Length: 131
Image 1 (cartoon, rainbow, N blue to C red):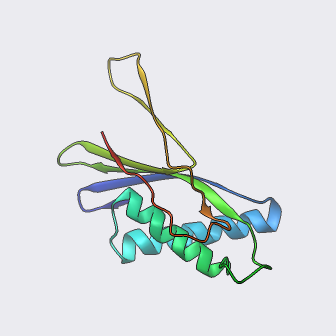
Image 2 (cartoon, rainbow, N blue to C red):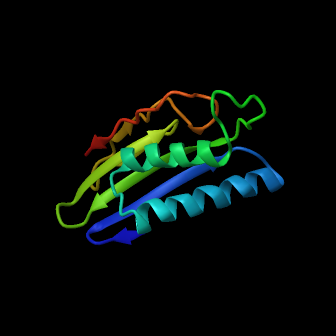
Image 3 (cartoon, one colour):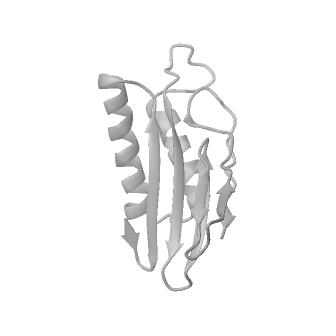
């Protein structure tokens, strides 16, 4: 998606197969669109935090609910500022591999060791990297 001068790209790996996997994909897609296009949140770490909060709420993954599902997703989120040509990245159990033009060097930027959703009840902090 492109919002103003920012182009966003997210790669997502949802848990589940068949109907549960499809449900997670639709939930993630709809929530990401709302976060970015409606709420205008463009910072990758904030996007992940808000998505985590919404997924846990939708799936009733709170401390008192033992019947809640463990489903979630791993996600890499990149925001590229077209004006400044700067890249920002945040990952939920996913890294970023960056290869610059004219270089054979591969730079690995590790994501945070948290998934989106699941049974971690505390607020998760996702690190954002500027490149």
